[in-house]
Amino acid sequence: MQRQLRALADRTTRYIRIYQLSEPGSWQAAGDTEHAAILQALTAGQEHRARTEMAHHLERTALRVLADCAPDFTPVAVPHAVALIEGQPAAALGLTGAS
Image 1 (tube, rainbow, N blue to C red):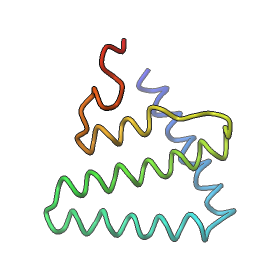
Image 2 (image 1 turned 90 degrees about the vertical axis):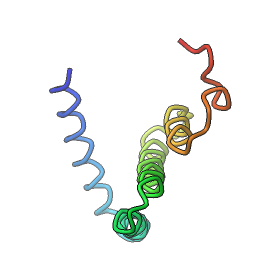
Image 3 (image 1 turned 90 degrees about the horizontal axis):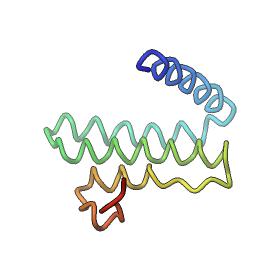
Image 4 (image 1 turned 30 degrees about the horizontal axis):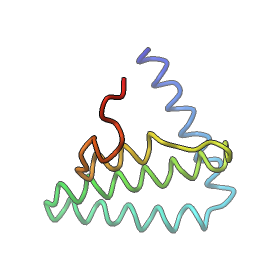
């Protein structure tokens, strides 16, 4: 399973890079800003802020890819994951009692 997940992650990265090259302005500008914010938080020793910045960076990327590839899909896991990183309790996320 881990091998399969790594292979999927590798392929996903390639597809994202190909897509980024077709629209370099929109992806690159946001990515540069987000990468700088993550690095700034890390160098300042602000672990929680770095983690939050990274979560929002990955969230934006995932939501953009999902919107482009599956416009009718309503993502639930991505916003929940970011909310957990931000420290929101499971009850506020509607996850209490979920199996």
